[in-house]
Image (tube, rainbow, N blue to C red; front, top):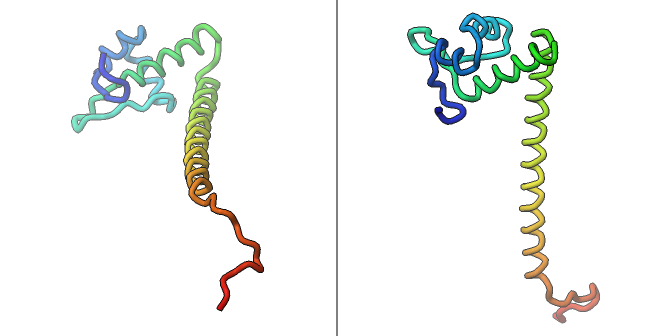
Length: 122
């Protein structure tokens, strides 16, 4: 299999790998659940990520009984949750970097502090 995001499968192969009919993939695209890449000659190409999404859609519709409108809503919520988790990780990383910078600054500034009235004489 190809790696993740790279679109390499034409619709017939993608449908076979996902265990569905090519028309099912077209319907998912029409409903806005799937966005295959199009070549210059208008051929749909699917990635492993697309196939995983198809498997999720099929699970939700066939096993859980969710209609396509519900699936669309659930997938949008999942995408939003993934985005929020990514943002939280980035913020935590930035906070960790800021803390490291702060600790380094504090370590170099451990000289005794003088009182305000103690100063150099002119």
